[in-house]
Image (tube, rainbow, N blue to C red; front, side, top):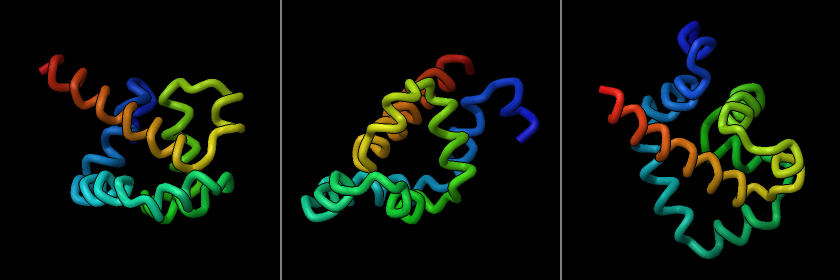
Length: 100
């Protein structure tokens, strides 16, 4: 975690790279209309925390490191947040590979 202080997106990568299988499951679940509708109607992040298997502190840290505006974070539903986090993670993976 000390590395995340120097490179904040490392926190995001480290959080999700340990959970690679969960991310694959999430991608499949996001294609399920019932789950999409549930997430689209939620704004409390509870369902999102359960799906991502992170606590509130970690979720807040992940979202803040993705450089989304406070307005977006406050107004986005859980589905929009999940999409934003997924996009941020995928971009970081590409950038991380390019650095190596």
